[in-house]
Amino acid sequence: MLYNINKIGKDERMKQDVLRIAKKAFDEKLMAGTSGNISVFDRDSGLMAITPSSYDYGIMEEKDIVVTDLDGNVEEGWLRPSSEWKMHAEIYRNVEHVNAVVHTHSPYATSFAVLQKEIPVILIEMLPFLNGSLEVSPYASQGSSQVGLNAVPILKRKNACLMANHGVVAVGKDVDQAYLSSVYAEDVAKVYHMALTVGTPVEINGED
Image (cartoon, rainbow, N blue to C red):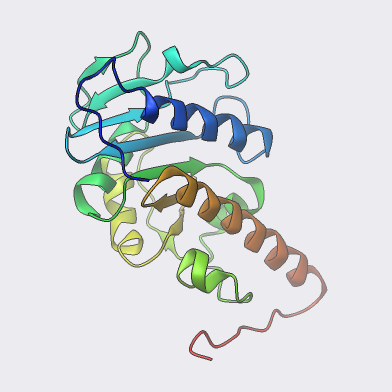
């Protein structure tokens, strides 16, 4: 789905989708506490809807989702946007096919981000859902624009990447696709972790 909001306050679809996926990701334990953030972007209006900063997912409601432009100016909302809004903005500015970003701290995938270790193609599902291996973007201070800029070269080619010593960022043409990529990133990381405990995982040739 592509988002089109002609006038703030009349079309709440973006905020509804952000809230739906945020709660889903939290329930699936892809995020703990108030970590992680979700956004969607409307390219016609130049506005994104994003989860608020440091807010309990358990009590989050549609009215709590913040709408901003890519410079962080709040167009709608009573809370501060996620502290990682700059990361989302840089991805939208630089990766034209992306209209949704899901950033999680899912434990298995984040453990490889902490190791700064790429996850090779070990499952065929990595090809259609992640566009190949899970690469690691260089470390940058959390909350900075550089976090997003460091991930951009990978996200131009892949649907997700590990952010060094940080977490996972997944993208898509809509929020459901981005969320699915984040789920597969965690599943692949879990399988890879388990395989490493008993032996040497065998990579597969994506061209086959």
